[in-house]
Length: 509
Image: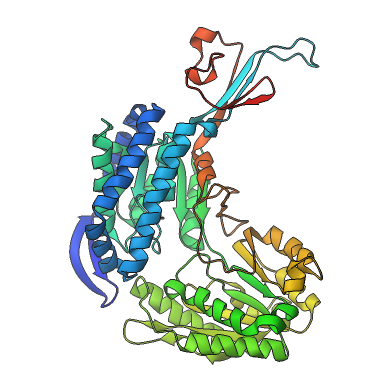
């Protein structure tokens, strides 16, 4: 594997800014993984782990000015957006610190012997242990929250798993800076720097998922890239869990009653959601089922006005820009497709937002219009106008898995009258998060959050956002008839660590 230079590139101009590193060789990947594997013991103490996560958040905040400047230079996402994303990242690290302190994630269950049960129950004690080294594949569109210090890394470290991060080529300089901050945080708690490894390069990413000491992987990116790594993880002599977020159309259903009640507000809200961040959010609404007729016309006019007033923006790199322009042209050229606001090139380095409309009937059966049911990364959405409820349902029945699905209901429908509950039942099999009278962009970091969905949205049933993301990097172990003196402290009767647990069928806190 040849070592090629890794450059920081300015997406506003397409020009190289500086050489950051070189692509990692197979030997360097091996060294990074082995260093991470050797650091496992330093994460055993939960108190140390929690303190490490909080220190990482503190040091990232202290370096905010430098980090945001570096991120903006490589992504053009803007200081306001990036400052908010860094704050979210720090909040997430601290939240996992709290989860580690609490200890409920260990799922401690203790059953004492019961000879009266059928069959008899021996002494059984169960909890969860870390899997080992986790490979993390950074995302392009969230250089903080889904990158080196993002949710996969934070949750893996919280679980007690060292990480090796494959840096995204769109922000290599930022990746190096953030990794250095995490290692400084580790050093303050006598944790080896190898607990957070960093490698660059496509081949390095492939070598990483194949390494025998890598125990699991987390990925956020394209369907094509994610599926290739997923297949590689499954094809190993010892397959490993691969938690990939790959792609999502995020359908929106607007009922006729909702459009009649507030078409203008829905159109404006849709415009804001589909153009947010230049349409580069994984939960951007990419397909909208809206009614035909006067109410639907009002909605389309409102959407037209709002999108027309939205400025052109810079995508994360020129490859994405080229793919967006080509994808728009291919979709707009399909029979029956109209473009009230034409998306595409907004200048030499920018793209302008827009949307397409199509009769929903063209999406009911398989054909060339199936392209409209595929995600197009960037500020574009497709509005499919349906004639009746059965037509909308027929389109929904053809959709693959998604991260989100949204329904806009009227006041009466939201109160339980009409088809509101029926539509929710239709959307639930399609997505991991179902929204009512809201917009999917904006993923709260909260205990009840679920950021995942049926394939191809994700390759597993887990979430990559929220406290339960830690579960991806743990496995259960049960001890049977083990002497008390040999048990780990988490499973002893006297509960020296003060953990929440289920003890002979009763929940103790």
